[in-house]
Image 1 (tube, helix red, strand yellow):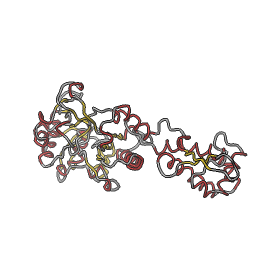
Image 2 (cartoon, one colour):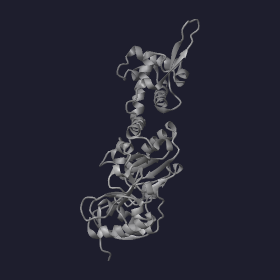
Image 3 (cartoon, one colour):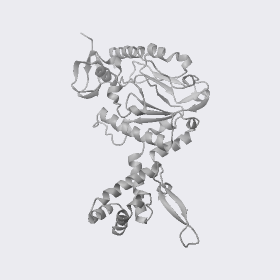
Image 4 (cartoon, helix red, strand yellow):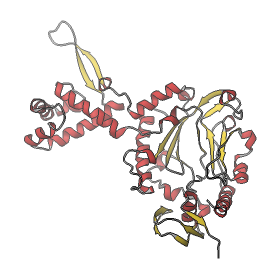
Length: 392
């Protein structure tokens, strides 16, 4: 990045912070703070181990330093400005989840556009929120667009703040479906049989929530599709599964046609073949419904995370807090464009051809010097796809 470009972005970041009110996280004075300045070196230099007392008012700090990136810690400490983690004296930490579009299944780097990648990431965010709100019943959640490639979720329920790393790992394993066992999804209930001296057991797939419901939903969708077929097609479809021959296929089809109501109630253990097939859908549920989070972020009690309201130095987009009911309509490439950068045009030297989607526009750009809306230009400058030209 050339010095002219760097100076321009620093100046415009300052202009943004002058007109933006930043709301710090809870207990901001107990957290470590860090930032990455605009430097001439090709790499990045993280300045960290700072307390809010050292930085001063966060709004004044951002306007004065206009950093490229700014972070605060998930952890809260007795002495957040101490130079080592041990000296800080950890007290508790938010539970942080990070979804990064670059690392999601279903995203093909080099083929999917930035907008397509972010749309896939939003789908993963909704799956994550299903786990956090429905399975864990967390209520103190903060949802944040990262300003770059994805989303963060901060959980601040009292029950999670003091969890150690190994316990956070268990939450990671759950939302990823790691180590999920089908038998753990099946409830065992003793039932006294008529005329019998000893009770027997009824085995039922959980249908009210959790991985059992996810498995059951996929299984019943398959059953309903199966019932749309004639017998020959249905039997052929069932025998596409490994280990299911004609006999087991017939048993499954009979159960589906004669006892769909029982299957809907979770009674998928009426026949060994039915249970074996349902087990396949627990694996399908993990594949399709897991939340592909960046696992080390969640287990790290000392993690630094982006400050909502700040600008992302790799995109010039705003790190945005979002209400739950705003997610459906939220378009990060429109709604995270700072107002500071709207209404102006600047000259830049674009270094690469290609489609740029930002600010509600889709522009097919060619390399070379050109005048662009500033919000498009600063996006390109921050991503290293253009350099600032002198204005005529």
